[in-house]
Length: 344
Ligand code: 5AD
Ligand code: SF4
Ligand code: FES
Image (cartoon, rainbow, N blue to C red):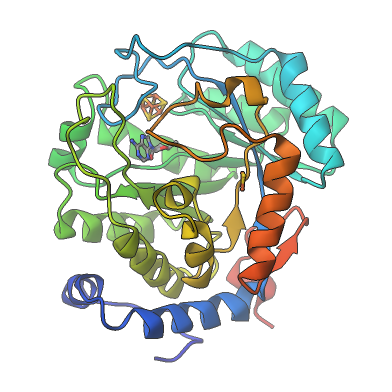
């Protein structure tokens, strides 16, 4: 495999490669080479602030779905969010990811106020939003207030599969529309999907990869599906760590410039899951910066790690993990590189 031309597999190549377990070491070595060519050994750090666990949606896989009355709900105030940023800043973070359910309490006006306040207080930091589907105008207003990155996983790019994971009020079309709007506005966009979500087939995964090729995101987040006991999918098994790692490697080969996180979900299913993710080609980690008192309540799936730890603990834990895995822990703002900028 030539490591300086992106890998362009056919559907048959993909289903064959993703179904094999005997070439993993080779696949991971090739993916690591590609990552090193573009990003070196650097692993970027993003501070994740889970600021509301209210959500108006009812995704069947997620513990924050509106139909789950067993989760205790919380919202962080602007001051609480800013104090998380301050703590994060002092710990070296230069990217803040504001993640939450689709919570109508945070109107555009409220969000703009929060984003502007962070942007003013920490002008050298990148603000990433992960707050779901909004209108073009809302996305534009958040951008104008200082947000520069947006994470919105497409979850599945197959219509039928999408309908099995979501209530009728949600649509894949709208999800895609949002992603293209975000790109048009100028955000660095992240998308992705769960691996092993209920009813997912290999064909679905290939459709996901083809959609990513169409979208050309700057960031790609994938993680295994993990059962949440208070959802309609409580009887479905967890997704496979092995397949997730293989997919990270294939995505790295196909999208050499992408920022790919080694996700908390991977670390939840396997104690060294995030380290394995890095070795398979991931180059971002997103430690939790939320106040310890609310962490357990952000229960999107069962047994989530880092819910009892303080921000400083996660920060230093991840530094140790990244270094032990043989990588450099980078505190840079870490924008996505693009071919025209970095190809000499
Ligand atoms: N298991 C794994 N990931 C999940 N997400 C939501 N529910 C689960 C689950 N049960 C993911 C979705 C969402 C992201 C914030 O968390 O992909 O986009
Ligand atoms: Fe809400 Fe996101 Fe959970 Fe869906 S996945 S219920 S949109 S928090
Ligand atoms: Fe949170 Fe290790 S990253 S405790």
